[in-house]
Amino acid sequence: MTYCVGLKIDTGLVFMSDTRTNAGVDNISTFSKMRTWQVPGGRVIVLLSAGNLATTQAVISLLDERTKAVEERAPSLLATPSMFQTAQLVGDTLKEVIRQAAPAGQNADAFGASFILGGQIRGGEPRLFLVYPEGNFIEAGEDTPFFQIGETKYGKPILIRAHEKGLGFAETVKLLLVSFDSTVKANLSVGLPLDLAYCERDSFTVGYRKRIEQDDPYFRTVSEGWSSALKSAIKSLPDFEP
Image 1: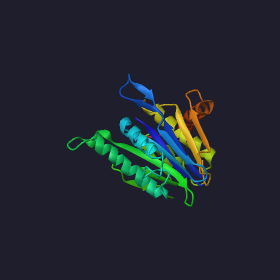
Image 2: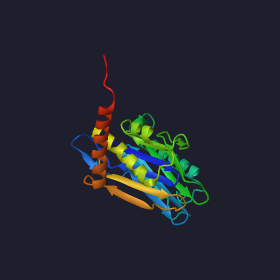
Image 3: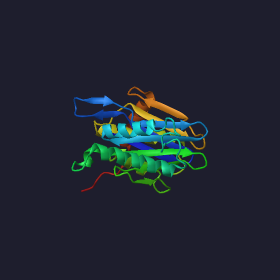
Image 4: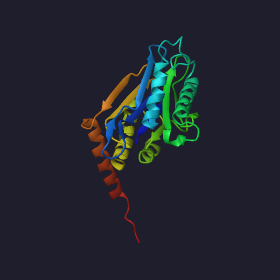
């Protein structure tokens, strides 16, 4: 299982993903679910993936392969004129991979995958998309500034309750770490290390990237502080009177 979040803030885009994959309790591995492409001064693209590992790796490999010798290999992530068309390209590539992996008569659901795509191309705004297994997609907006894929149900209440407009990068990372901590504690199929990336508006680069390990002191502080704050909040509520 997987948990990934992409969040749009005033100053850019923030992404976080776990790295755990498993095929049973005795077969757990670590794979990065975050891929980036950059053209200095021109574009930055970040892709988070969830679902069938073979499908997501095939999609990313195809997208990456087609960025080499762009003039000879169209379409390419490095040549799309807009983020909207980049999302179309990712969706089409996903459909292509699933179609090849699941010939007629086979259940395509077993090969399903979903993606969070974000980035900025010169001349446009930072944009964030959720690409569904069917290849169609939606875009984040004022009312829905973040997307989640994978094991979303444990971390989503945190984001819904605590997210507010105007959050800076540091506050957003704190919020995401609480969301991931809640998910990790509730589901063993999601686990550290976590990958974090930040694309500042008009920088056209991943300006900050970090892998948050199990022993990361800030993550431990957030995790312990959140547990303590929850216990204090529960105790501060009035007791039930039968």
